[in-house]
Amino acid sequence: MSKTTRRKFLGQAAGLAAGAGLTLAGCATSGNKPAASAKKARVVVIGGGFGGATAAKYLKRFGPELEVTLVEYNKKYYTCPGSNWVLGGLRDLESISFTYDGLRKHGVKVVHDWVTAIDADGQNVRLASGGQLPYDRLVVSPGIDFRWDTVAGISEKDSNTIPHAWKAGPQTAILRNQIMSMRRGGTFVIVPPPNPFRCPPGPYERVSMVAHYLKQHNPTAKIIILDPKPKFSKQGLFTAGWKKLYGFGTDNSMIEWIGGDDGKVSKIDVATRTAYHGPLEEAVKADVLNFVPAQKAGRLAEAAGLTDASGWCPVNQATWESTRVPKVHVIGDAAIQKPLPKSGFAANSEAKMCAAAIVGLLRGEDAGPPSFINTCYSLVAPHYGISVAMVYTLKDGKVAKVKGAGGLTPPNVDVSQEAAYAQSWWQTITADVWS
Amino acid sequence: MHKKHWRLALALGVLAALPAAAPAAEPNLMGRNIGVTCFGCHGTDGKSQGVAPSLHGKKAQEIIDKMHAFRAGKDPEATIMDRIARGYTDEQIRAVADYFANLP
Image (tube, rainbow over all chains, first blue to last red; front, side, top):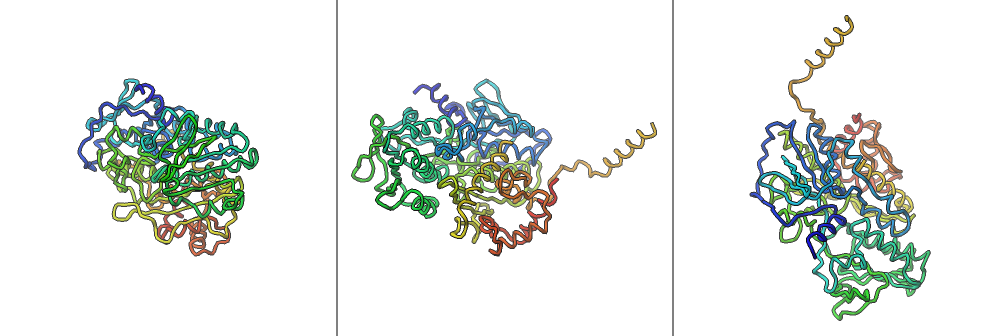
């Protein structure tokens, strides 16, 4: 594949480009000296998703004196949360898109360009247009990239016929169209990724939304989940909903879940949409195949030397500064966030704490004790919602769950109310990020 | 003319009252750091965009009482807030309540 195509793909899918070229990673520690003149301090943010857009907005909120520049290739962002609702026919794709005009109103300078390199020694971001953005602090929020080499027979170029739809936008539209035009009684096969990956409940909300659509428009169709994991996020809540709505566990079930070693897909035949799974490499022929590859940090992070052997970015969770490249902070899915999950809500929380820490570092002031929340809703059907939540604190320099807090939707809570809160959640957090 | 001098004097007086070169640090950092994470569901500055309640304009004591009821499992309206309220100490609840009560 040519470099140009690769770049184009990156731009469309992730909204970021990482040149293979120059990346000068410095030493692993960083001084906390206040900038000579805090008034002129420059912070550059790369990536305009939940993490990056929140960071840019809250850097201006906490440090109005800062010059904040956001670099994002795409002029429009489609949110992954809500994209399963598009697949279920609950909303249309354009209704989950945002521009960057909201951030401009907060005084953020928005640049739609490719990043070709991060020069960490020179504290400079290089752009494809030839421009340069010098920085005092850099925030990198590049999201995820895929490991195409973990399943034989399929590669990045196949994603137009076998969509992952794990980055919302054109991929979501491809999958939606395939589901809508699937033959009567056809089979939808989803292959969720192994841990860790973006949005742990996402594949199972997707199954729910596809089941909701098929139940109305193609009721003899089947859904098969070929899952490399022996268990999954919100499993009890999802399966209870599937039993209630889609006959799960009966002979007549629309949904079949094959998990663990038996569910592990080793090979895909793209031409026939056949997935081979389990130790015996059993063949399952799909009418619509949704293969979501294993994941790693966005390509820019790797090119900039921010990743470790795991493929993700180690950070000091008190400030979200990289432990590998000084003065560069990594937030969101790309960072090693554990015990925070790879979710939009966690990225939003991290971005705010990272922005507070950066303003503190640049001013030579205390940033206060960090605090984090994750709140994640999924729809099993339009009026059937479930949630998981957790509160996190900083303990010995690391993010820790607060004991006794958080958990899943309890049995006494009305699922239709949870569904209403799910909609409210999406409406509100996206306004917090992009408005 | 007279009026203008008066205004200038007032303006200078206000300026003189400010501490020299003090950065505009947000006070109550504990409350701020917790409060901004509430924005995800309750909206920027506590102004919700959906059915989740707005916290903007609420009195501190109202928020404190509600959080204590959630934490004790005694609020019949709880769907998720009981799970979240259990994550905070009395001191943190007071700080975040003060933060919301003092937002412009």
